Length: 201
Image (cartoon, rainbow, N blue to C red; front, top):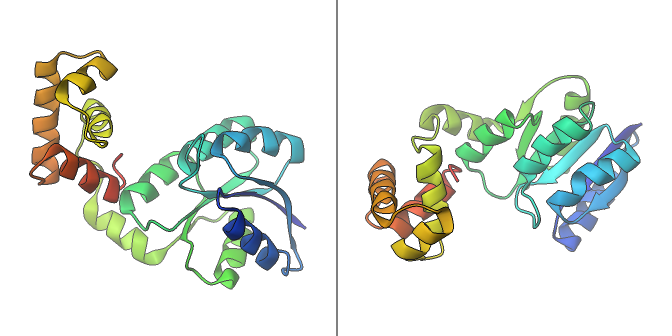
């Protein structure tokens, strides 16, 4: 029996996934959580073989939860589930140690097959997303440019970003200018949106 941890913040989606997986004769959902930061503790308490992690969760996103789980319980294989088929997310998930990356609209049979495959030591990646990731390549943003764009995503002023990141306003303007150029955007808010859509933030 493959023991599964299910991390999904939307109760209805979590319940549906559990009900569907419980129909599989060799898969058992042993624990559910609704926040990313609950994943390591739940995994240590229940010792799942596979963790299904939604990418967008409060407390900690699925990618960071996968990274934390790789330290807390290295034997547990992670599969990241997302409604956002963004190539940058795929790359970040693989770098965090995820063994699988699937979009949520995949058939349940595909999800069950993915769970079995990662248990067998394979990697499972949505094909269309893998092709897009190869086309786009890695993020062009430096760590600092990404930090500044994250801070700018809610429409914060240059002064506000500078105060939040302990940088001078001139330095913030330079990072924003570089990030806007690399994303091909016209404004910092648009640059943040483009970077988020591509999974660079």
